[in-house]
Amino acid sequence: MNRFEPSGDREAKVRYLDGDFQIVLPGSHVVCAVTGRVIPMEELRYWSVARQEPYVDAAAAFEAEKRAGALPNQ
Image 1 (cartoon, one colour):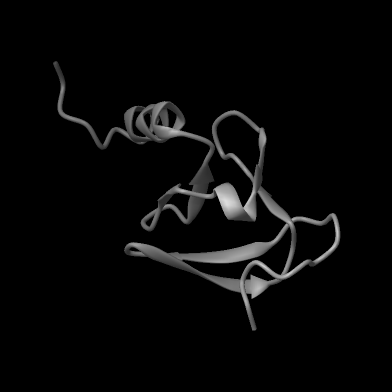
Image 2 (tube, one colour; image 1 turned 180 degrees about the vertical axis):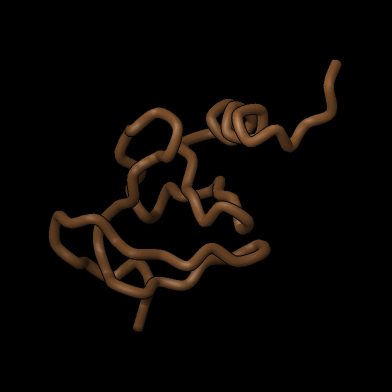
């Protein structure tokens, strides 16, 4: 199955891997865990393998790392 084939207007269920992801249940998008913004599947570039969460951009991914306490104190 092509991971970008049309799947209607529903949220996909995704397993996030190192450098890739696996579609568990097809859908047209996922929702950013930090901002709540919709991320079309073809634009998904940022996620956390440890937390299994997608992020809309690098800033959201950075914010998630801070919230999780995964960054050293500055």
